[in-house]
Amino acid sequence: MKKKNTIFLSIIVTAFALLYWAGTFAEENPNKHTGFGRSPALSANGEEMAFSYYKEGESGLYTAPASGGEAKQLLPPQTVGSYARPAYSPDDTKLLYIKEWEEEEKPYNQLMIYDFETEQSEPLKSPDHYIQEAVFAPDGKHIFLIKAGSYVENYYGDGESPQDFDIYKMNLENKETKRITKFNFYSLSSLQVTDDEKYLTYSFYNEKDVIQRLNLKNKNTETISSEPQYESDTGDVSVVGSPAISPDGNTIAFSEVADTSDIGTFQYEVFTMKTNGKDVEQITNFHEHVTEPVFFPNGEELLVTVDQNFAGRQTDYEYWKISDNGNEQKQIIIEIPDHSQQE
Image 1 (cartoon, rainbow, N blue to C red):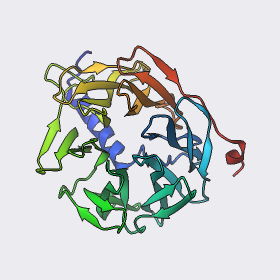
Image 2 (image 1 turned 30 degrees about the horizontal axis):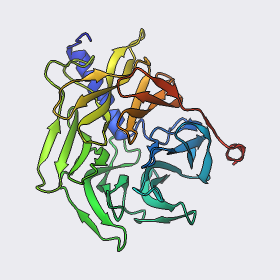
Image 3 (image 1 turned 135 degrees about the horizontal axis):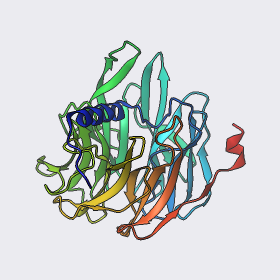
């Protein structure tokens, strides 16, 4: 990859990253998106996936075989609001998700849980708590979540935005919630916990995209960065998105700028590297916007989301299954039930 180390490009990349973290590319598309959502989840056994499907900007929640096929609607689209960022429990009996809506130019993200046996949902937090995302702990009895500490008025006076994000741990039995970090970050996302519950991995923006992991035993943090000889196509200012850790905890998959189109649009691909920053490898070559990698339980395949219309006004997400070396790839074709189209 060629290096484009110019001040102008750095400014453009920084501006793009700020827009990304501020929510320009949030789950709910302001252009009344119809189609698949951005952040699908894989079940613990790797046989099923959960995802949002949008109808004119509002989404329902669905599941489908991870190999493709007919989808099942868990929650229908609402007149106001959307469902986003599903996450399975370790025994695949429950599903965390975020209920999103806006009132008087103020966004709300409420943490919910769906029970596959009863086919019922219930809130885990009140709407007063803005929850960015949440994942189950390996024991299935606790969850880790990213919560905003406050809201701030937008620069142009057109509403409020959440800020001061930190990571919390909740006991699902008594709903007791404990704050485990004191970051107060402007942005915080891509939360994952290792199977041995030793590390939490996450990413945030601080003049550049940063991937870190937190040792839950001693509370030490470690920044995960690529080896020095690797150079992003954006030069010194990289835009690293949606990092995901492999089941064995040794590999990180992430989305990064790999090239630019003829009209100057950044083209994102998925890369992998060891957690020590070595062996950086590009494993997709879609020449589009590839993001949200998720490892299958075998650690040898990934689920990725491809926006086939990244430069356009409307997103066009597709789900693909790829091998960890990029040699094999297959689109996951999902059929949405007709009744969802009639909501």
